[in-house]
Amino acid sequence: QVQVVESGGGVVQPGRSLRLSCSASGFDFSNYAMHWVRQAPGKGLEWVAVISNDGSNKYYADSVKGRFTITRDNSKNTLYLQMNSLRAEDTAVYYCARSRSTWKPQYFDYWGQGTLVTVSS
Amino acid sequence: DIQMTQSPSTLSASVGDRVTITCRASQSIGTSLAWYQQKPGKAPKVLIYKASILESGVPSRFSGSGSGTDFTLTISSLQPDDFATYYCQQYNTYSRTFGQGTRLEIK
Image 1: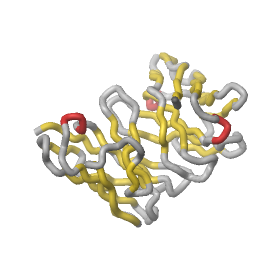
Image 2: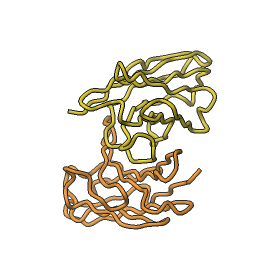
Image 3: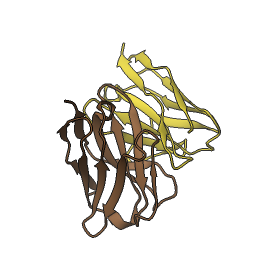
């Protein structure tokens, strides 16, 4: 069955970097756009970034633009989020989610269980 | 960016009640709207997409309606498993946005 599993979260100091991974299985990863969505403790959902099925198109939330980079390796069925210049307000559970298209805006039909990133000195 | 506003923020209801949650977009999004259910410590789960289409496996007591800027999620007869937080999401643009959430509590 479809599974997406995030990893790479942890505690990091402000200004430092962290890379998250999302490993996918049970579907043809190269046929789907993928997203990162985050949720600060006790708060709502915030969309972070999207990448097209082939990696050629990307789009970011204003709050992370210039600091975060979304990439994918279709040969490894893995999605990544490189997070640089981290701030306390980036503290959140980060989810990867599958979109129901290759790039055209669609809803998210599968989500991982999330990985917690804590930015603190 | 398109802003999504849900109401109410919190809703208290009893098992068997019919409840409605409202979501308003800051500009027209056609029917590019999804509803998600999230339970504590769990990932969101899609219930409705394209404003009114029930995702496979979702109980028929859930329904959605609306187009343009005004949307509703209705649960016809609340079950114990339905007490959770609900989010609307627009996907009319590449920059997706979620409503702030509606927490459905047991009265």
